[in-house]
Image 1 (cartoon, rainbow, N blue to C red):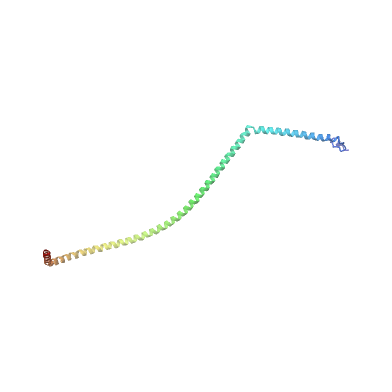
Image 2 (tube, helix red, strand yellow):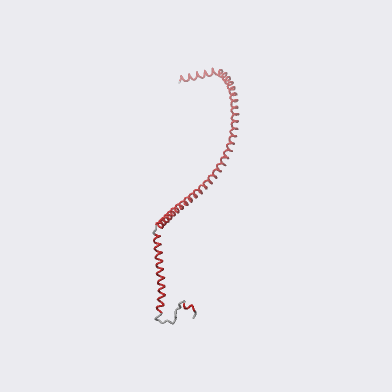
Length: 185
């Protein structure tokens, strides 16, 4: 047999059944010892964790985390409101832009109409000036005709006065005849 068998226990196969439970108990002891050590290790770790979890720093950290979550929720709400406000503002801006475009088109139409009115105004001014000249000429003609009429009226008055003097005895006799007829009636 090799020399290392003396140092390394090799399970024997020629054991009787009465010897087998002893070998099996050694293995269970090792397993039991390992489990006890594992339980003790986990218990120590659990105690350390419980002490640290209940420490002031850990509690402060949890409070800070909750506060951070609260602030985050508040910021999310404010961000949502800001986005809604921005959307409303964009809609208003679009409406304003449409209004500006409409107003600019209206302004262009008004400018064109104003130019048309200005050209008509200039036409009317020319016509007014022409009518003023015609009126001045007509006034001069009327004045000339009036002077001519006055001279002709004076001539007629003179002619009428001379015919009145000739008709005067006739008029007197007609008046007398009328008065006599009135008295008889």
